[in-house]
Image (cartoon, rainbow, N blue to C red; front, side, top):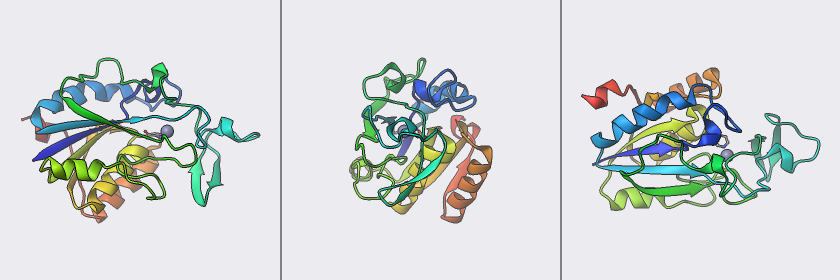
Length: 203
Ligand code: VGL
Ligand code: ZN
């Protein structure tokens, strides 16, 4: 059984949003076309409380994209984004939601960021996604969405570690940093993950 994980396809990550990923909107039609080819479709939402510590605004004198130590972990400071209940935290306009069986929300603990759909960045708490997928008989996990070099990458990495046969759908994601994405792809391949194109799935 194959699952499609649609990661953080939210207005704040789409051009015009608070933490826009270049061409982020280009993946929405692909995310829609891919869904019927899977046994299970699950989405994630980045879902932060207003004073989340990943926001530069929560650290007086700090600017977005600076890095700090946050409770013992390296943390990129982001513009305020995906605040719980805000329009930018919804699902992107045009994304088909009918086949999305459930949505896992992450980044809700104000003290720690959570790029992966499976764990927070310190691997301190699980979201329950791995157990959920196993309970549905899923062995293969395909990851798409935003951003390629952050939440998509870390979700794929945790899927591999959880023992799923893991595929990143390259044309159904876009990075914040293209250089970062190249490193991410190399890391995933080295860990046994696969980089695929949507054409191989849409046939
Ligand atoms: C993301 C940065 C901060 C992502 C979320 O969805 O890739 N990136 N929060
Ligand atoms: Zn975030």
